[in-house]
Image (cartoon, rainbow, N blue to C red; front, side, top):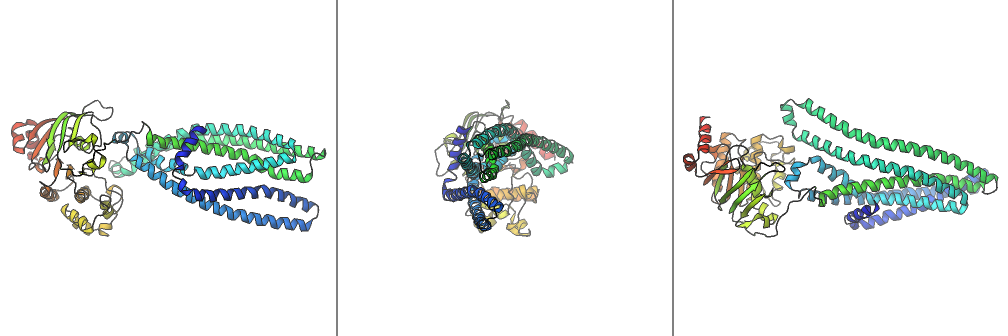
Length: 577
Protein backbone atom coordinates (compact mmCIF):
# COMPACT_ATOMS: atom_id res chain seq x y z
CA UNK A 1 0.00 0.00 0.00
CA UNK A 2 2.71 2.52 0.97
CA UNK A 3 4.81 1.88 -2.15
CA UNK A 4 1.76 2.60 -4.27
CA UNK A 5 1.00 5.66 -2.13
CA UNK A 6 4.46 7.21 -2.59
CA UNK A 7 4.27 6.67 -6.35
CA UNK A 8 0.93 8.46 -6.60
CA UNK A 9 2.05 11.17 -4.17
CA UNK A 10 5.01 12.03 -6.43
CA UNK A 11 2.58 12.31 -9.32
CA UNK A 12 0.32 14.74 -7.43
CA UNK A 13 3.30 16.77 -6.22
CA UNK A 14 3.91 18.13 -9.73
CA UNK A 15 0.54 19.93 -9.44
CA UNK A 16 1.27 21.26 -5.94
CA UNK A 17 4.96 22.22 -5.97
CA UNK A 18 4.24 25.75 -7.25
CA UNK A 19 2.28 26.19 -4.00
CA UNK A 20 5.06 25.01 -1.70
CA UNK A 21 5.28 28.43 0.04
CA UNK A 22 1.63 28.04 1.07
CA UNK A 23 2.36 24.49 2.24
CA UNK A 24 5.34 25.69 4.30
CA UNK A 25 3.20 28.36 6.00
CA UNK A 26 0.53 25.73 6.66
CA UNK A 27 3.15 23.37 8.14
CA UNK A 28 4.71 26.06 10.35
CA UNK A 29 1.27 26.89 11.73
CA UNK A 30 0.73 23.24 12.59
CA UNK A 31 4.12 22.99 14.31
CA UNK A 32 3.29 25.99 16.50
CA UNK A 33 -0.10 24.42 17.16
CA UNK A 34 1.65 21.21 18.24
CA UNK A 35 3.70 23.13 20.80
CA UNK A 36 0.58 24.78 22.22
CA UNK A 37 -1.23 21.41 22.37
CA UNK A 38 1.63 19.96 24.40
CA UNK A 39 1.81 22.91 26.83
CA UNK A 40 -1.92 23.48 27.49
CA UNK A 41 -2.56 20.14 29.33
CA UNK A 42 0.42 20.87 31.61
CA UNK A 43 -0.97 24.33 32.40
CA UNK A 44 -4.42 22.79 33.00
CA UNK A 45 -2.90 20.44 35.56
CA UNK A 46 -1.09 23.34 37.22
CA UNK A 47 -4.34 25.30 37.39
CA UNK A 48 -6.09 22.40 39.14
CA UNK A 49 -3.21 22.03 41.64
CA UNK A 50 -3.25 25.79 42.31
CA UNK A 51 -7.00 25.70 42.77
CA UNK A 52 -6.85 22.86 45.29
CA UNK A 53 -3.97 24.51 47.21
CA UNK A 54 -5.57 28.01 47.32
CA UNK A 55 -2.68 29.53 45.31
CA UNK A 56 -4.89 32.22 43.77
CA UNK A 57 -2.24 34.45 42.25
CA UNK A 58 -0.57 31.53 40.49
CA UNK A 59 -3.98 30.31 39.32
CA UNK A 60 -4.83 33.72 37.79
CA UNK A 61 -1.44 33.90 36.08
CA UNK A 62 -1.85 30.39 34.59
CA UNK A 63 -5.36 31.30 33.45
CA UNK A 64 -4.11 34.39 31.58
CA UNK A 65 -1.29 32.38 29.96
CA UNK A 66 -3.77 29.70 28.83
CA UNK A 67 -6.09 32.40 27.46
CA UNK A 68 -3.24 33.95 25.46
CA UNK A 69 -2.13 30.57 24.08
CA UNK A 70 -5.67 29.64 23.05
CA UNK A 71 -6.01 32.95 21.17
CA UNK A 72 -2.69 32.36 19.42
CA UNK A 73 -3.93 28.88 18.48
CA UNK A 74 -7.15 30.31 17.04
CA UNK A 75 -5.21 32.78 14.86
CA UNK A 76 -2.84 30.03 13.75
CA UNK A 77 -5.77 27.80 12.79
CA UNK A 78 -7.19 30.62 10.68
CA UNK A 79 -3.88 31.16 8.84
CA UNK A 80 -3.43 27.40 8.38
CA UNK A 81 -6.93 26.93 6.99
CA UNK A 82 -6.51 29.91 4.64
CA UNK A 83 -3.34 28.45 3.12
CA UNK A 84 -4.82 24.95 3.04
CA UNK A 85 -7.80 26.16 1.01
CA UNK A 86 -5.55 27.88 -1.53
CA UNK A 87 -3.44 24.73 -1.92
CA UNK A 88 -6.58 22.63 -2.37
CA UNK A 89 -8.26 25.05 -4.80
CA UNK A 90 -5.28 25.56 -7.10
CA UNK A 91 -4.22 21.90 -7.21
CA UNK A 92 -7.85 20.82 -7.75
CA UNK A 93 -8.11 23.13 -10.76
CA UNK A 94 -4.86 21.78 -12.24
CA UNK A 95 -5.80 18.13 -11.67
CA UNK A 96 -9.29 18.53 -13.12
CA UNK A 97 -7.93 20.35 -16.16
CA UNK A 98 -5.29 17.65 -16.67
CA UNK A 99 -7.83 14.84 -16.41
CA UNK A 100 -10.26 16.69 -18.69
CA UNK A 101 -7.54 16.86 -21.35
CA UNK A 102 -6.91 13.13 -20.96
CA UNK A 103 -10.60 12.29 -21.26
CA UNK A 104 -11.00 14.13 -24.57
CA UNK A 105 -8.11 12.07 -25.97
CA UNK A 106 -9.93 8.77 -25.36
CA UNK A 107 -10.93 6.78 -28.43
CA UNK A 108 -14.55 7.25 -29.49
CA UNK A 109 -15.07 3.49 -29.45
CA UNK A 110 -14.14 3.47 -25.75
CA UNK A 111 -16.40 6.46 -25.06
CA UNK A 112 -19.26 4.62 -26.76
CA UNK A 113 -18.76 1.65 -24.42
CA UNK A 114 -18.69 3.63 -21.14
CA UNK A 115 -21.32 5.75 -19.45
CA UNK A 116 -20.65 9.43 -18.82
CA UNK A 117 -20.79 8.70 -15.07
CA UNK A 118 -17.45 6.90 -15.27
CA UNK A 119 -15.75 10.13 -16.32
CA UNK A 120 -17.88 12.57 -14.29
CA UNK A 121 -17.16 10.84 -10.97
CA UNK A 122 -13.43 10.60 -11.62
CA UNK A 123 -13.24 14.19 -12.84
CA UNK A 124 -15.03 15.52 -9.73
CA UNK A 125 -14.76 13.20 -6.71
CA UNK A 126 -11.46 11.43 -7.38
CA UNK A 127 -9.51 14.56 -8.34
CA UNK A 128 -10.85 16.21 -5.16
CA UNK A 129 -9.28 13.49 -3.01
CA UNK A 130 -5.96 13.88 -4.81
CA UNK A 131 -5.97 17.65 -4.43
CA UNK A 132 -6.60 17.41 -0.69
CA UNK A 133 -3.93 14.82 0.15
CA UNK A 134 -1.16 17.25 1.23
CA UNK A 135 -3.54 19.09 3.54
CA UNK A 136 -4.69 15.75 4.96
CA UNK A 137 -1.12 14.58 5.52
CA UNK A 138 -0.16 17.85 7.15
CA UNK A 139 -3.15 17.83 9.46
CA UNK A 140 -3.10 14.23 10.64
CA UNK A 141 0.67 13.75 10.76
CA UNK A 142 0.90 16.93 12.86
CA UNK A 143 -1.74 15.57 15.22
CA UNK A 144 0.03 12.22 15.41
CA UNK A 145 3.37 13.91 16.14
CA UNK A 146 1.67 15.96 18.87
CA UNK A 147 0.28 12.82 20.47
CA UNK A 148 3.62 11.00 20.20
CA UNK A 149 5.29 13.99 21.90
CA UNK A 150 2.77 13.78 24.72
CA UNK A 151 3.38 10.03 24.96
CA UNK A 152 7.11 10.68 25.40
CA UNK A 153 6.28 13.18 28.14
CA UNK A 154 4.35 10.42 29.92
CA UNK A 155 7.39 8.15 29.53
CA UNK A 156 9.46 10.71 31.44
CA UNK A 157 6.81 10.94 34.18
CA UNK A 158 6.16 7.21 34.72
CA UNK A 159 7.39 4.16 32.76
CA UNK A 160 4.60 1.84 33.92
CA UNK A 161 1.84 4.19 32.73
CA UNK A 162 3.74 4.60 29.44
CA UNK A 163 3.80 0.81 28.88
CA UNK A 164 0.09 0.59 29.70
CA UNK A 165 -0.72 3.34 27.19
CA UNK A 166 1.42 1.70 24.46
CA UNK A 167 -0.46 -1.61 24.99
CA UNK A 168 -3.77 0.23 24.81
CA UNK A 169 -2.76 2.04 21.59
CA UNK A 170 -1.70 -1.20 19.87
CA UNK A 171 -5.02 -2.90 20.63
CA UNK A 172 -7.03 0.09 19.39
CA UNK A 173 -4.83 0.29 16.28
CA UNK A 174 -5.61 -3.32 15.33
CA UNK A 175 -9.32 -2.57 15.63
CA UNK A 176 -9.10 0.62 13.54
CA UNK A 177 -6.85 -0.82 10.81
CA UNK A 178 -9.31 -3.71 10.39
CA UNK A 179 -12.12 -1.18 10.04
CA UNK A 180 -10.21 0.77 7.37
CA UNK A 181 -9.44 -2.38 5.35
CA UNK A 182 -13.05 -3.59 5.34
CA UNK A 183 -14.43 -0.13 4.61
CA UNK A 184 -12.07 0.29 1.67
CA UNK A 185 -13.34 -2.96 0.12
CA UNK A 186 -16.90 -1.61 0.28
CA UNK A 187 -15.82 1.82 -1.00
CA UNK A 188 -14.49 0.37 -4.27
CA UNK A 189 -17.87 -1.24 -5.01
CA UNK A 190 -19.70 1.93 -3.95
CA UNK A 191 -17.76 4.11 -6.39
CA UNK A 192 -18.49 1.77 -9.29
CA UNK A 193 -22.22 1.83 -8.47
CA UNK A 194 -22.12 5.62 -8.05
CA UNK A 195 -20.66 5.97 -11.55
CA UNK A 196 -23.63 4.04 -12.92
CA UNK A 197 -26.09 6.34 -11.15
CA UNK A 198 -24.32 9.49 -12.42
CA UNK A 199 -24.34 8.14 -15.95
CA UNK A 200 -28.03 7.21 -15.81
CA UNK A 201 -28.99 10.62 -14.38
CA UNK A 202 -27.07 12.22 -17.25
CA UNK A 203 -29.08 10.10 -19.71
CA UNK A 204 -32.35 11.22 -18.10
CA UNK A 205 -31.39 14.91 -18.24
CA UNK A 206 -30.26 14.73 -21.87
CA UNK A 207 -33.25 12.66 -22.98
CA UNK A 208 -35.94 14.23 -20.77
CA UNK A 209 -37.99 15.62 -23.63
CA UNK A 210 -38.12 12.23 -25.36
CA UNK A 211 -38.92 10.50 -22.07
CA UNK A 212 -41.90 12.82 -21.60
CA UNK A 213 -43.05 12.40 -25.19
CA UNK A 214 -42.90 8.62 -24.79
CA UNK A 215 -44.78 8.87 -21.47
CA UNK A 216 -41.99 6.77 -19.98
CA UNK A 217 -41.37 8.80 -16.81
CA UNK A 218 -42.52 5.98 -14.52
CA UNK A 219 -40.24 3.41 -16.15
CA UNK A 220 -37.24 5.67 -15.88
CA UNK A 221 -38.04 6.66 -12.30
CA UNK A 222 -38.36 3.00 -11.33
CA UNK A 223 -34.99 2.27 -12.92
CA UNK A 224 -33.48 5.30 -11.19
CA UNK A 225 -35.00 4.18 -7.89
CA UNK A 226 -33.38 0.74 -8.23
CA UNK A 227 -29.99 2.22 -9.10
CA UNK A 228 -30.12 4.79 -6.28
CA UNK A 229 -31.31 2.08 -3.89
CA UNK A 230 -28.42 -0.12 -4.98
CA UNK A 231 -25.75 2.57 -4.55
CA UNK A 232 -27.13 3.65 -1.17
CA UNK A 233 -27.15 0.03 -0.07
CA UNK A 234 -23.40 0.01 -0.70
CA UNK A 235 -23.08 3.35 1.11
CA UNK A 236 -24.96 1.82 4.08
CA UNK A 237 -22.59 -1.17 4.10
CA UNK A 238 -19.63 1.21 4.30
CA UNK A 239 -21.31 3.08 7.14
CA UNK A 240 -22.19 -0.18 8.87
CA UNK A 241 -18.53 -1.21 8.92
CA UNK A 242 -17.62 2.16 10.47
CA UNK A 243 -20.44 1.96 13.04
CA UNK A 244 -19.62 -1.55 14.24
CA UNK A 245 -15.90 -1.02 14.58
CA UNK A 246 -16.26 2.42 16.13
CA UNK A 247 -18.64 0.94 18.69
CA UNK A 248 -15.98 -1.62 19.53
CA UNK A 249 -13.30 1.10 19.53
CA UNK A 250 -15.37 3.35 21.82
CA UNK A 251 -16.18 0.53 24.25
CA UNK A 252 -12.51 -0.46 24.50
CA UNK A 253 -11.51 3.17 24.91
CA UNK A 254 -13.93 3.61 27.83
CA UNK A 255 -12.60 0.44 29.43
CA UNK A 256 -9.02 1.65 29.04
CA UNK A 257 -9.94 5.02 30.62
CA UNK A 258 -11.35 3.17 33.63
CA UNK A 259 -8.26 1.00 33.89
CA UNK A 260 -6.03 4.09 33.61
CA UNK A 261 -7.80 5.74 36.56
CA UNK A 262 -7.37 2.58 38.61
CA UNK A 263 -3.70 2.43 37.66
CA UNK A 264 -3.15 6.09 38.59
CA UNK A 265 -4.88 5.57 41.96
CA UNK A 266 -2.70 2.51 42.61
CA UNK A 267 0.49 4.44 41.81
CA UNK A 268 -0.53 7.46 43.92
CA UNK A 269 -1.41 5.30 46.94
CA UNK A 270 1.93 3.51 46.64
CA UNK A 271 3.87 6.79 46.40
CA UNK A 272 4.98 5.99 42.83
CA UNK A 273 3.26 9.07 41.40
CA UNK A 274 2.29 12.54 42.66
CA UNK A 275 -1.23 13.91 42.33
CA UNK A 276 0.01 16.70 40.05
CA UNK A 277 1.73 14.20 37.72
CA UNK A 278 -1.39 12.03 37.70
CA UNK A 279 -3.47 15.07 36.69
CA UNK A 280 -1.07 15.86 33.83
CA UNK A 281 -1.27 12.25 32.58
CA UNK A 282 -5.05 12.23 32.84
CA UNK A 283 -5.25 15.54 30.94
CA UNK A 284 -3.00 14.03 28.28
CA UNK A 285 -5.08 10.84 28.05
CA UNK A 286 -7.53 12.24 25.48
CA UNK A 287 -4.64 13.20 23.20
CA UNK A 288 -2.91 9.86 23.64
CA UNK A 289 -5.96 7.75 22.76
CA UNK A 290 -6.74 10.05 19.81
CA UNK A 291 -3.44 9.05 18.19
CA UNK A 292 -5.09 5.77 17.20
CA UNK A 293 -8.07 7.62 15.75
CA UNK A 294 -5.79 9.93 13.78
CA UNK A 295 -3.70 6.99 12.52
CA UNK A 296 -6.93 5.21 11.51
CA UNK A 297 -8.23 8.26 9.66
CA UNK A 298 -4.83 8.72 8.01
CA UNK A 299 -4.83 5.10 6.84
CA UNK A 300 -8.36 5.58 5.55
CA UNK A 301 -7.31 8.72 3.69
CA UNK A 302 -4.26 6.98 2.23
CA UNK A 303 -6.37 4.09 0.94
CA UNK A 304 -8.98 6.52 -0.42
CA UNK A 305 -6.17 8.43 -2.10
CA UNK A 306 -4.69 5.26 -3.61
CA UNK A 307 -8.09 4.16 -4.91
CA UNK A 308 -8.83 7.58 -6.42
CA UNK A 309 -5.35 7.84 -7.93
CA UNK A 310 -5.59 4.37 -9.46
CA UNK A 311 -8.96 5.26 -11.03
CA UNK A 312 -7.45 8.45 -12.49
CA UNK A 313 -4.37 6.56 -13.69
CA UNK A 314 -6.69 4.12 -15.45
CA UNK A 315 -7.82 7.03 -17.61
CA UNK A 316 -4.32 8.48 -18.05
CA UNK A 317 -2.35 5.43 -19.10
CA UNK A 318 -4.20 2.11 -18.95
CA UNK A 319 -5.45 -0.17 -21.71
CA UNK A 320 -8.94 0.18 -20.25
CA UNK A 321 -9.23 3.68 -21.74
CA UNK A 322 -7.14 3.72 -24.94
CA UNK A 323 -6.26 7.11 -26.39
CA UNK A 324 -6.56 8.37 -29.93
CA UNK A 325 -3.29 8.13 -31.83
CA UNK A 326 -2.07 10.50 -34.51
CA UNK A 327 1.02 10.75 -36.61
CA UNK A 328 3.61 13.52 -36.64
CA UNK A 329 3.41 14.70 -40.23
CA UNK A 330 1.89 18.16 -40.62
CA UNK A 331 0.28 19.61 -43.71
CA UNK A 332 0.62 23.39 -43.84
CA UNK A 333 -2.14 23.71 -46.42
CA UNK A 334 -4.73 21.08 -47.29
CA UNK A 335 -5.98 21.13 -50.88
CA UNK A 336 -8.98 18.90 -50.17
CA UNK A 337 -8.20 15.71 -52.13
CA UNK A 338 -8.85 12.44 -50.30
CA UNK A 339 -9.21 8.78 -51.10
CA UNK A 340 -10.51 5.56 -49.50
CA UNK A 341 -8.46 2.54 -50.59
CA UNK A 342 -9.94 -0.91 -49.89
CA UNK A 343 -11.28 0.25 -46.50
CA UNK A 344 -12.86 -2.26 -44.10
CA UNK A 345 -14.47 -1.22 -40.82
CA UNK A 346 -16.78 -2.56 -38.11
CA UNK A 347 -17.85 -1.15 -34.72
CA UNK A 348 -16.60 -2.71 -31.49
CA UNK A 349 -17.37 -6.38 -30.97
CA UNK A 350 -19.91 -6.44 -33.79
CA UNK A 351 -18.52 -8.75 -36.47
CA UNK A 352 -20.72 -7.23 -39.16
CA UNK A 353 -18.72 -5.06 -41.56
CA UNK A 354 -20.14 -1.54 -41.78
CA UNK A 355 -17.78 -0.79 -44.69
CA UNK A 356 -16.69 -3.72 -46.83
CA UNK A 357 -13.62 -3.09 -49.01
CA UNK A 358 -14.76 0.25 -50.43
CA UNK A 359 -12.73 2.37 -52.84
CA UNK A 360 -13.42 5.91 -54.02
CA UNK A 361 -11.62 9.18 -54.60
CA UNK A 362 -12.74 12.78 -54.14
CA UNK A 363 -10.90 15.63 -55.81
CA UNK A 364 -10.31 19.07 -54.29
CA UNK A 365 -13.25 21.50 -54.64
CA UNK A 366 -15.55 18.70 -55.79
CA UNK A 367 -19.06 18.23 -54.40
CA UNK A 368 -19.88 14.56 -53.80
CA UNK A 369 -23.05 13.10 -52.32
CA UNK A 370 -23.53 9.77 -50.52
CA UNK A 371 -26.97 8.18 -50.60
CA UNK A 372 -28.44 4.87 -49.54
CA UNK A 373 -30.62 3.34 -46.87
CA UNK A 374 -29.94 3.81 -43.15
CA UNK A 375 -27.05 1.59 -42.02
CA UNK A 376 -25.39 1.55 -45.44
CA UNK A 377 -22.23 3.17 -43.98
CA UNK A 378 -22.59 6.79 -45.09
CA UNK A 379 -22.01 8.48 -41.71
CA UNK A 380 -19.25 6.00 -40.96
CA UNK A 381 -17.31 7.31 -43.96
CA UNK A 382 -17.43 10.78 -42.43
CA UNK A 383 -16.34 9.51 -39.01
CA UNK A 384 -13.38 7.66 -40.51
CA UNK A 385 -12.34 10.65 -42.62
CA UNK A 386 -12.24 12.78 -39.40
CA UNK A 387 -10.33 9.90 -37.72
CA UNK A 388 -12.99 9.48 -35.06
CA UNK A 389 -12.32 5.76 -35.52
CA UNK A 390 -9.46 3.83 -37.09
CA UNK A 391 -10.04 1.56 -40.06
CA UNK A 392 -9.72 -2.22 -39.61
CA UNK A 393 -7.78 -2.45 -42.86
CA UNK A 394 -7.14 -0.40 -45.96
CA UNK A 395 -6.03 3.22 -46.14
CA UNK A 396 -7.51 6.73 -46.12
CA UNK A 397 -5.42 9.55 -47.57
CA UNK A 398 -5.73 13.34 -47.56
CA UNK A 399 -3.81 15.00 -50.40
CA UNK A 400 -2.11 11.67 -50.96
CA UNK A 401 -0.91 11.28 -47.34
CA UNK A 402 -2.14 8.41 -45.13
CA UNK A 403 -4.15 10.00 -42.29
CA UNK A 404 -2.49 7.59 -39.85
CA UNK A 405 0.74 9.56 -40.35
CA UNK A 406 -0.86 13.01 -40.04
CA UNK A 407 -1.05 15.00 -36.81
CA UNK A 408 -4.43 15.97 -35.37
CA UNK A 409 -4.29 19.57 -36.60
CA UNK A 410 -3.79 18.50 -40.23
CA UNK A 411 -6.97 16.42 -40.09
CA UNK A 412 -9.46 18.11 -37.80
CA UNK A 413 -8.48 21.72 -38.41
CA UNK A 414 -9.19 21.21 -42.10
CA UNK A 415 -12.48 19.32 -41.86
CA UNK A 416 -15.83 20.55 -40.58
CA UNK A 417 -18.67 18.12 -40.06
CA UNK A 418 -22.28 19.23 -39.66
CA UNK A 419 -24.33 16.34 -38.30
CA UNK A 420 -28.06 15.68 -38.38
CA UNK A 421 -28.16 15.89 -34.56
CA UNK A 422 -25.72 18.71 -33.74
CA UNK A 423 -24.93 19.34 -30.08
CA UNK A 424 -25.54 22.94 -29.08
CA UNK A 425 -23.74 23.98 -25.90
CA UNK A 426 -25.57 25.42 -22.90
CA UNK A 427 -24.34 28.96 -23.39
CA UNK A 428 -25.20 31.98 -25.47
CA UNK A 429 -25.37 31.84 -29.25
CA UNK A 430 -22.36 34.16 -29.38
CA UNK A 431 -20.32 31.84 -27.13
CA UNK A 432 -21.29 28.83 -29.24
CA UNK A 433 -19.54 30.60 -32.10
CA UNK A 434 -16.51 31.63 -30.07
CA UNK A 435 -15.88 28.00 -29.20
CA UNK A 436 -15.24 27.46 -32.88
CA UNK A 437 -12.98 30.49 -33.38
CA UNK A 438 -11.35 32.55 -30.61
CA UNK A 439 -10.74 35.67 -32.71
CA UNK A 440 -14.19 35.67 -34.32
CA UNK A 441 -15.41 39.15 -35.24
CA UNK A 442 -19.00 40.32 -34.93
CA UNK A 443 -19.15 40.75 -38.70
CA UNK A 444 -17.99 37.19 -39.35
CA UNK A 445 -20.58 35.78 -36.95
CA UNK A 446 -23.45 37.76 -38.46
CA UNK A 447 -22.40 36.90 -42.05
CA UNK A 448 -22.30 33.19 -41.15
CA UNK A 449 -25.78 33.40 -39.59
CA UNK A 450 -27.15 35.21 -42.63
CA UNK A 451 -25.67 32.56 -44.89
CA UNK A 452 -27.34 29.88 -42.74
CA UNK A 453 -30.68 31.78 -42.71
CA UNK A 454 -30.44 32.25 -38.94
CA UNK A 455 -29.76 35.95 -38.40
CA UNK A 456 -33.40 37.13 -38.59
CA UNK A 457 -34.46 34.53 -36.03
CA UNK A 458 -31.64 35.47 -33.63
CA UNK A 459 -32.51 39.16 -33.79
CA UNK A 460 -36.04 38.36 -32.60
CA UNK A 461 -34.72 36.67 -29.43
CA UNK A 462 -34.86 38.66 -26.12
CA UNK A 463 -31.06 39.07 -25.87
CA UNK A 464 -30.24 38.50 -29.53
CA UNK A 465 -26.84 36.80 -29.91
CA UNK A 466 -26.41 36.82 -26.11
CA UNK A 467 -29.45 34.56 -25.61
CA UNK A 468 -28.60 31.35 -23.73
CA UNK A 469 -30.07 28.38 -25.62
CA UNK A 470 -30.13 25.76 -22.82
CA UNK A 471 -28.46 22.35 -22.59
CA UNK A 472 -28.29 20.74 -26.02
CA UNK A 473 -30.03 23.81 -27.47
CA UNK A 474 -33.28 22.77 -25.77
CA UNK A 475 -34.92 26.14 -26.44
CA UNK A 476 -34.35 25.78 -30.20
CA UNK A 477 -36.30 23.76 -32.73
CA UNK A 478 -34.59 21.00 -34.68
CA UNK A 479 -34.28 23.23 -37.72
CA UNK A 480 -32.90 26.13 -35.70
CA UNK A 481 -30.27 23.88 -34.11
CA UNK A 482 -29.18 22.64 -37.53
CA UNK A 483 -28.97 26.17 -38.90
CA UNK A 484 -26.86 27.21 -35.89
CA UNK A 485 -24.57 24.22 -36.49
CA UNK A 486 -24.27 25.13 -40.15
CA UNK A 487 -23.44 28.74 -39.25
CA UNK A 488 -20.79 27.51 -36.78
CA UNK A 489 -19.23 25.52 -39.62
CA UNK A 490 -19.27 28.51 -41.95
CA UNK A 491 -17.11 30.58 -39.56
CA UNK A 492 -14.43 27.85 -39.52
CA UNK A 493 -13.94 28.00 -43.30
CA UNK A 494 -12.16 24.65 -43.53
CA UNK A 495 -11.12 23.17 -46.88
CA UNK A 496 -13.36 20.10 -46.45
CA UNK A 497 -16.99 20.45 -45.29
CA UNK A 498 -19.14 17.42 -44.52
CA UNK A 499 -22.94 17.71 -44.38
CA UNK A 500 -24.37 14.65 -42.59
CA UNK A 501 -28.13 15.02 -43.10
CA UNK A 502 -27.57 18.64 -42.08
CA UNK A 503 -30.80 19.85 -43.70
CA UNK A 504 -33.03 16.99 -42.53
CA UNK A 505 -34.85 19.09 -39.91
CA UNK A 506 -35.40 22.11 -42.15
CA UNK A 507 -38.60 23.09 -43.90
CA UNK A 508 -38.57 23.21 -47.69
CA UNK A 509 -38.13 26.99 -47.87
CA UNK A 510 -35.20 27.07 -45.43
CA UNK A 511 -33.67 24.00 -47.05
CA UNK A 512 -33.76 25.78 -50.39
CA UNK A 513 -31.93 28.74 -48.81
CA UNK A 514 -29.30 26.48 -47.28
CA UNK A 515 -28.97 24.63 -50.55
CA UNK A 516 -28.29 27.93 -52.25
CA UNK A 517 -25.63 28.70 -49.65
CA UNK A 518 -24.03 25.31 -50.30
CA UNK A 519 -24.17 25.93 -54.06
CA UNK A 520 -22.36 29.25 -53.51
CA UNK A 521 -19.54 27.33 -51.77
CA UNK A 522 -19.06 24.90 -54.64
CA UNK A 523 -15.74 24.95 -56.48
CA UNK A 524 -14.15 26.70 -53.49
CA UNK A 525 -14.39 23.85 -50.96
CA UNK A 526 -14.44 20.08 -51.04
CA UNK A 527 -18.04 19.33 -50.05
CA UNK A 528 -19.44 15.94 -49.08
CA UNK A 529 -23.16 15.55 -48.51
CA UNK A 530 -25.20 12.74 -46.96
CA UNK A 531 -28.91 13.02 -47.67
CA UNK A 532 -31.98 10.82 -47.72
CA UNK A 533 -33.85 13.32 -49.86
CA UNK A 534 -32.30 12.93 -53.30
CA UNK A 535 -33.67 16.31 -54.38
CA UNK A 536 -30.97 17.93 -52.23
CA UNK A 537 -28.07 16.18 -54.00
CA UNK A 538 -29.06 15.78 -57.65
CA UNK A 539 -26.86 18.76 -58.61
CA UNK A 540 -23.74 17.28 -56.99
CA UNK A 541 -20.72 16.66 -59.21
CA UNK A 542 -20.97 12.96 -58.31
CA UNK A 543 -23.25 10.72 -56.29
CA UNK A 544 -22.13 7.48 -54.61
CA UNK A 545 -24.88 4.98 -53.84
CA UNK A 546 -24.06 2.71 -50.89
CA UNK A 547 -25.67 -0.59 -50.02
CA UNK A 548 -24.61 -2.79 -47.09
CA UNK A 549 -21.20 -1.18 -46.80
CA UNK A 550 -20.35 -1.32 -50.50
CA UNK A 551 -20.52 1.19 -53.33
CA UNK A 552 -23.15 -0.13 -55.68
CA UNK A 553 -23.22 2.82 -58.06
CA UNK A 554 -21.30 6.00 -58.84
CA UNK A 555 -21.85 8.92 -61.18
CA UNK A 556 -24.15 11.84 -61.86
CA UNK A 557 -27.85 11.76 -61.04
CA UNK A 558 -28.78 11.01 -64.62
CA UNK A 559 -26.15 8.29 -64.94
CA UNK A 560 -27.32 6.51 -61.77
CA UNK A 561 -30.93 6.59 -62.92
CA UNK A 562 -29.80 4.59 -65.94
CA UNK A 563 -27.20 2.29 -64.37
CA UNK A 564 -28.28 1.66 -60.71
CA UNK A 565 -31.65 -0.02 -60.16
CA UNK A 566 -31.68 0.57 -56.39
CA UNK A 567 -30.95 4.27 -56.85
CA UNK A 568 -33.72 4.54 -59.43
CA UNK A 569 -36.20 2.85 -57.05
CA UNK A 570 -35.22 5.23 -54.25
CA UNK A 571 -35.71 8.23 -56.53
CA UNK A 572 -39.04 7.01 -57.88
CA UNK A 573 -40.34 6.37 -54.34
CA UNK A 574 -39.37 9.92 -53.37
CA UNK A 575 -41.11 11.34 -56.43
CA UNK A 576 -44.31 9.50 -55.46
CA UNK A 577 -44.39 11.46 -52.19
